[in-house]
Length: 182
Image 1 (cartoon, rainbow, N blue to C red):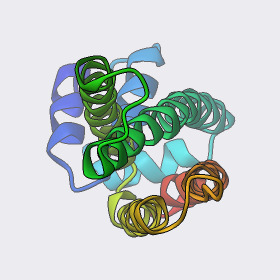
Image 2: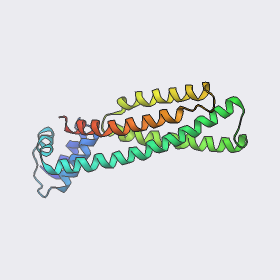
Image 3: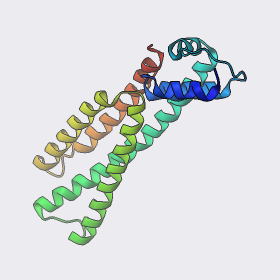
Image 4: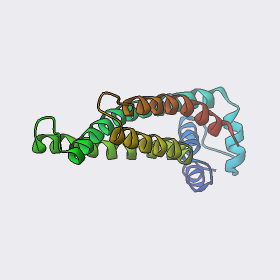
């Protein structure tokens, strides 16, 4: 079976996107042009090879780095957005409303961009549901702590940092589990 046909079959299969990407990379790196007809048999064959493990590790490390950057940017941008929301609610601006609004809106835009990138990456591994609960809970806690506690006691940044470290730790474990599952 030709390389193009097997790539089309891989893309149509019910594997998670990360597995599809790994298999397509492996098919493209193989020298021969004749492949087995069954995609699941091909995946089992590839998943036992050392090349697959190297590709999988590289892909997970690449996506882990992308998630680290997104999560760091989320911590900063969500914190700035929450500072702006609190300033609007209590009418106590750092500089004045215009400057605070520009910073708050820019932080909100960066938050949306990074959330979208984060969940696209997690969607490749079919891990969106696992991380949505953690992110929503941390955001709700941040809002509650930011709005109801005095300025001297700011737990929102701590909550966002805990969320960052939990996401960082859980991603590698879950990603390798999803790639090794058949």
